[in-house]
Length: 289
Image (cartoon, rainbow, N blue to C red; front, side, top):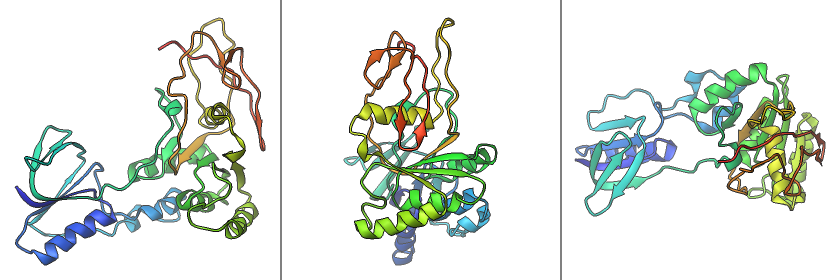
């Protein structure tokens, strides 16, 4: 049994574990995290993706010899029993604790429409493993869409601009950094991004969620299997999509018996929406579930 278990190996979780060890040197502490490596600065991930920073520079947690601190990396928590003071991990291992600290943080929500088999080029800006994949992907796929105009999205756009990448930043609110800046300050940020040749798109004008769905289908380069007599999917313009914000999207299911025009919910061969500077043709069908 551990005297204290910390769920989450981010900066908050590691600092909590260190604090426990400092105040109670005789106590046994464990950190549980889903990633195989912990103790790195997530805020530096954009610099790592654009190759201006090496991976070793990301880490603030060095190997420490502490027999009373155990890191259970590569494990996710499946269940917590507060009455028995135990945690069940994904490998069916049970961890017992006297005190529990939950510092798991948030996570980006990828829209349901993107949960399709064999989709490529979609990367949440959250984990080091996803950052490694994105770093390699954008070398040969330089046209990038970033969904989310918060701190992470804006920072990612700025650090990727100027490296032979075509950057489009999409925000669903009226302004960038809506939780951080006033509208006037946000306009100054927008001017700076435009000076970096970053294309800004605002989704607030899209009152119809189905139009949002069309945009996601275009930028995520999704193609669904069609019958042999169909014309087949078109080629989309965007090659990488980074999710940096929580996005709510409907409908939950995109199954239909025939090719569907999502713009007006009628059967058809496709649609040609124009959204800001976007012009793309989408022709696809969705197989019944």
